[in-house]
Length: 70
Image (cartoon, helix red, strand yellow):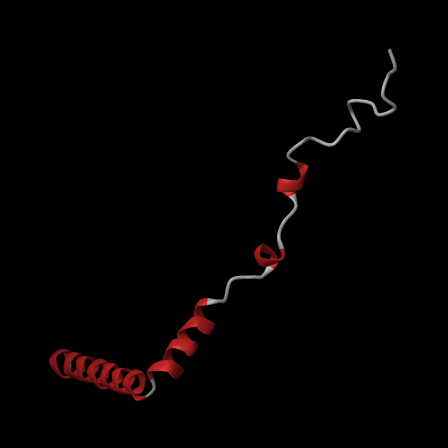
């Protein structure tokens, strides 16, 4: 009987190929800001309209609170 030249400590496990990462897994996920900017560019004027409506609403709430507490 012949013995193999590799010892059990240096032998690769049968699932070693599954442990290596793929190229697609190495790509980082886009950040939240990048996704939001892409979405804003895609939707165009609707995002700007919502932004200005939110700004006006927030200013109205702050001015109303200042009036009530002043």
